[in-house]
Amino acid sequence: MTSFAIDIPASTIARLRDGDEKALEQVYRLFERPVFTLAWRLLGDRDEAQEVLHDAMLALIDRIGQYRGDAPFWGWLRQICVNESLMRLRKRRLDYVEELPEPEAVARQLEPAIERADLERALEGLSPTARSVVWLYYVEGWTHEEIARSFDRTVSFSKTQLSRGTRKLRDLLQLDQGVRAYA
Amino acid sequence: MPDDRFELSPAGDADDAPLREALRALPLQAPPHSALPDLKARLAQRKRARGLRRWLPLAAAAAVGVVALSLLLRRGATPDAAPEATADPELAALIAQNQVYESALRSTAFGGRALSARDALAGAEIEDLIGMLDLELSATGDAAQARDLWQQRLVLMQELAAVRANAAPARMTAHNAQALPASWQLN
Image (cartoon, rainbow over all chains, first blue to last red; front, side):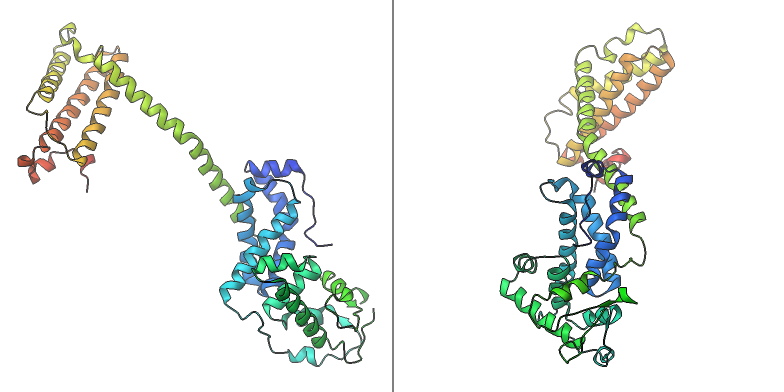
């Protein structure tokens, strides 16, 4: 289950529409980390993720009147966060299939167990686009259709990026070289 | 540390369930600093702007109403209709001077000329101010206040006459332009 899946009472959303500061604070505190984490995973840059957190919350204030309530609030806010993040990715004008060089620290990793820190480093070894697709698919539970729509690309683009990203992650974690991870 | 270790499947399929679980178990990250103070300030700013947008049309409508009412009053029982009714010679003089300007402005000397947009705008604004003064004059019962209001009205009449005088092309000199009220020195 995505960390975004937090239900907000309708009364809080109504107060947010009225510009209630307490309601804003309540929503901010609940979603601060999910929004920041998602932006960081997609962008790979803490400073930019901080800006996305700010801009997404500001967009929330501006567009709360457009929220109809026919879908979960958290899904709506998450979409704003993804849109803000992908907009920044597009501005970087990176090649969609660009792959960053394999980090040496990860390549040397031959321990029988996979640590979180290694997984974090492996994620950093993916291109921003592959990392975004991997994260949206595995963690946020998006379908290939949803990912393709957000990237303004085809479904096969999403599938290809997921396949490449997964393979790259496994390579960086050396999972297909006879090394198994055990809890 | 068991919580920091994940079992990943060796299979290379695109939908890797163990990888999904491992990724989902990664902890949430905290931002370097809170965005809340700035967001609160922005919220307050937007709230003020929304309030202004809500009241501005009403305020504008109220202002138009005041001006319309004052114009109606001027056309009916205008305050300058009975200067002889006052026993205050100073007040009577002010009223008389106002009437002189009014008569002059109604005469052909000022009438029938095409006004530039600049002059028309300035003239209309001054007329509105005169209308508001008339409204105050019709409501006041205090002689001192009436004198003050008539004095202000006289100044406005002079300014209006200057604007109308500037409308004549032959008289559009720098000197005449300076005769405009300072607040109507338009660029």
